Image 1 (tube, rainbow, N blue to C red):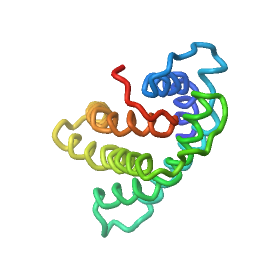
Image 2: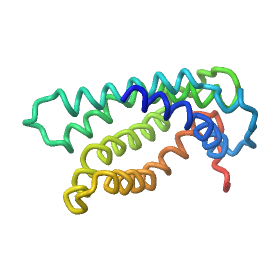
Image 3: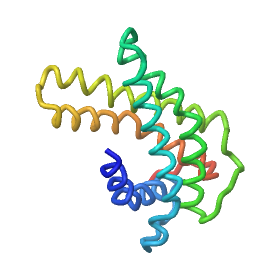
Image 4: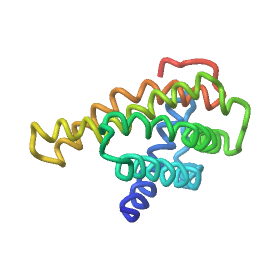
Length: 171
């Protein structure tokens, strides 16, 4: 699991950086050092959120539903993700850390909206889809696709808010 997580961070970091440039309405730089800005912050976020998700979804008593545990893990991981992604986004976009809008109500609520949805799709919706399709790989792809569609608007506006841009561009 750790090897897969490490590989995904290494391969997806440039895409994450380009996504943040696009969402912030800033022309991206395709230089390798720029694409890996904020790398350690992204490692910190992934280790933290995966730990929270796994502890809550696998270690808490089975007397609670998967849906309840998924929502709880999203709520608990929100402060960690809010700080981590704020620092990563500002490092990626401006090459420095700014603390101007770290905990605005807007960016925290947008992060909460996205973070609740993610574990719900990861742990709850994928099992429902899997019960109909009987193929874990396909149900994972479908739940990930639906999750991407529903969380992207939250992520877009969160990135704008955290990148210290007060406008929402048409791009």
